[in-house]
Image 1 (cartoon, helix red, strand yellow):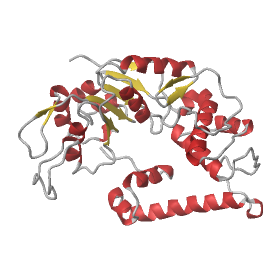
Image 2: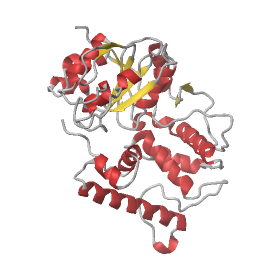
Image 3: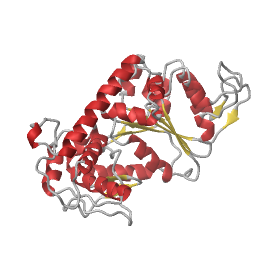
Image 4: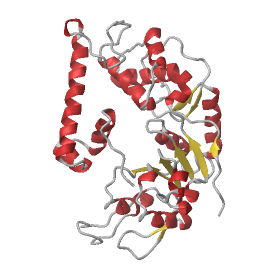
Length: 352
């Protein structure tokens, strides 16, 4: 068995950096760097970032399987999108499967599809992600969450590029590029028997590790610029972060990585950072201020955040951690519900 290539020796980009567009209305940070590298919606000015983007550009045209590793919020899906867009199958579909979000009893049908009557509730045939991605790319996010009993079938699909739906008997040949992502150390998981070694080797033909924001702190001002540009274009308004605010953001630790940074910047815009207004009471931490000194919009944002967290906590407790049931009860789209849980740190990792 041929071992996988080692990690590309520079970390990768972030999840929420966005390339500017001519229509964007923005003022952004005053110190935007003049030299940066971009690849799709990935951007960076550090030497490590530019080198990794170059590596991705080399990998993209090849039809090799790619494994993206790194913490949540570091940009694995954007990296996969960029690789797909620069690949030979870019005219085909880009299909995403979040292996951590699909219930265990449905993941096999989600990946491989099913025939009518294959199981209770299968009232009609349904194509799985691999068939939907035929001619393009399937992105298997959080592949480390895939149950061991499903892994042999995925391994066979990777090896044969043929698939049989649940309840089906006739295999279908596919032309699909596979990109997987994980926030786990799959090599260690394989050593400890929590992930199949043969599947790991099949997935990790090429590996790229995504760095935490802490590892590329020098890119924070650039990321601030691109996030502000995106928010300006989205809201059709002009927002500004002054140099002091950017410096403060650059000094902070970001355990949620670029996703957390973007959320923080968006909160600042909601709290009234626009038209160059400087608000000395704008919170860069969650330390409460005396009621008499609090800006109305600051208090409102804090109240909303407190309500969301309490509501989500009670709802998840009521439904015993069942995300799908809780989202239905709240009349909230499941994807948006997952984002709310992530925002408040309430989404627990799945057990192996």
